[in-house]
Length: 428
Ligand code: ASP
Image (cartoon, rainbow, N blue to C red):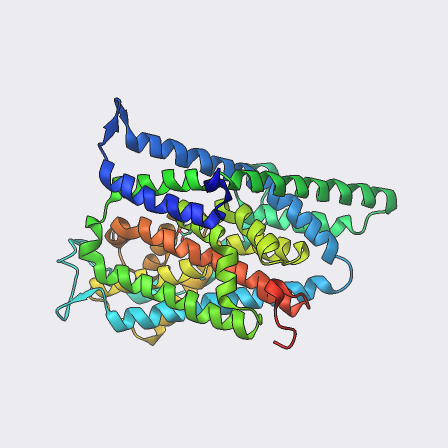
């Protein structure tokens, strides 16, 4: 069949177009032969999402353990870890600053020089004791993240999708595996690399169904959400979009070009299937199998680097999320008429950075983080309701940016480790 020969990202793009069409035509109530079409979309989407989620625990564990085993010996671990963390922090920070700059420029929470509170139907009053609530919020967040890193029960952590705990355990396991005596070390290493190979093969197979899954997921969103919700929040919506686009096409592209020595266009092409899947699933965790596949197969990064940078990145490095949290928090503060001075804005930057680390790679996870920021600023949690209407569409976009930043990180770090991803120029 011809269609099967079409590159996967084209198939997914066509599916996306068809999904928008089908969702718009059917609306929330449309049915065919007595079956509600939205239910059919939801079924297809959930089936695909489940298949992706099914891969996550064994894929991450085997990938981290094999990756760790290959870097655990010698001083490579500290070097790789240092570069990875530096990359995560730098890009998340750049993302937040981009968002902060744009939201201060467009001021979506101010309508005709007045806070948009009434226009947006907000009723709760401001807490008068703002300043006291602010103090100390950053440290609590940090402690929370460390606690999640060391789960009391590794099986429960895996079952609940507590990735941070799983990753930490995998890192320890891989590290100590390198210290085993010989016949044991050899057999365990083979077992885990065999498992990893199988998981990649299953991922490859599941990926072939991506167009169908994407169709279901997107058609459902379009049919149930529609576009009417965008109008009252248009300025906010487009501010987030513009900031995300700037981060992806300028910040990350410059880093790719000048630090990674690769063409940002080639990178986009290599990552297309993963980006489109992130867009339709709104979950960087669910997309992780595809992200790994694209970075290894299309961008040619070694397993040693991908297995360290990507699983950790999918949970910890969320540029799009950090940016979104920041823009949303400032927007809500503007709508309530709260003047934000430099210290307030700094608090938002720090809390957005920390919460984006703690946020899970699942749909709508940012909303929880935003309530934390609002609480830190003494704003009522009801503010979150304001952005609910457009959250889903923005979630799709910020998740793609989250995934793209992880992938770019893998490519850049691979380059710094002497590899030549995407055939990077040697003199770059
Ligand atoms: N959906 C996002 C992700 O999975 C998290 C969020 O910002 O809600 O990356």
